[in-house]
Image (cartoon, rainbow, N blue to C red; front, top):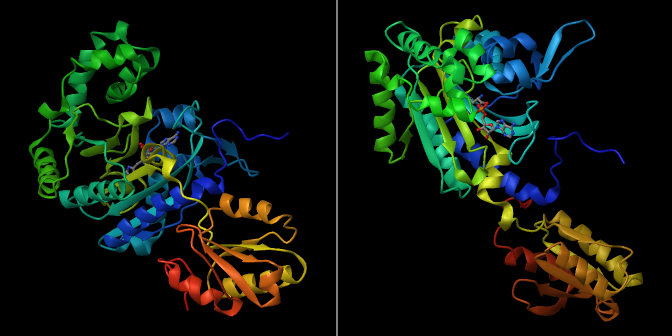
Length: 427
Ligand code: HAM
């Protein structure tokens, strides 16, 4: 039997209702704040991610699916969406010339991580990116959208972690990194092998290390909060003011640096302890220099992305409803089957979903199938009903059953379906 590679999953129809609810909530929230969808490629030239995410990040050094095309150019399956959206924004001059632009995206991402609960090699994200202003309002807008999406899908017990990692100037993060480096240098022997390398190239990355030894060293490390320049402090205060005004609660975490190098100023994560080791289900931040480093006009930007699979784990797929089928038709074969097929056609034309089994054996067997499909109505056409061009219509929620002329069936079901017209092909 052929199998799928580890960490690469199929998503069967029984997960699709919950899945669509999450994506639907995201799309609606994006629409309400005027974000519009962009479809970015699933693969890019490798330098898009190497340059965008940072040479020293775990994603670039260990987790990318990279291969050569037939012409010998190195391609990589996208591990995230931000670098691609920036590349697209910069390469399309029309957008880069606009004073601001709002995008959102949904789709699969690929990271060669060690698979475990909530950590996949192919996973799905939705995310949003704003280009064009350093105003802290936009940091708030991005965070508020993710907050609203969480609420809409019923995730309540989460925390929003917030930080500002400042800008690169020497009187801000630049100076902080020097102090951080000397702090860890004095404790070099206690660092893991990766962090000893990070110490030379990018000491900030050490704050993101999950190894126990490094994580506990972090507790005594100098804090970025004490090293922000006046402009970055003001920006951070602005973000918090907007969040306070909207009653969005957050917890400040001065060590939240995130695993990607493009961030400046705001960083944030939505976390929950319901995910075990993988505690973030959404994250993002500001990246004011990335557009310029990709060759675009200097353009401040901020964004976030959420993992769909992780959100489903947190939201609990337990309440996954059935297939959403409106009508299952049960028939006695022969003339009754012919009439059932005709009625199925009529129902479908009227925008009512209908299913039946032409080989349907016993009534009992077909009723079991109706049950398994969680159909809202069962329509039964036995020999008696067929003789009088009638059918028995059973409302599966109330258990009520009545015999009606077959030609009235569509109209009666239509009247009884509370959401007819929403997602049903209404006329
Ligand atoms: P990220 O934190 O790397 O940020 O990923 C965002 C979310 O994607 C995570 O919070 C998680 O829910 C999901 N995720 C990441 N890796 C996996 C995995 N291996 N398996 C399952 N889910 C995963 C970014 O990707 C940035 N591009 C966010 C951003 C947008 N920053 C600014 N704009």
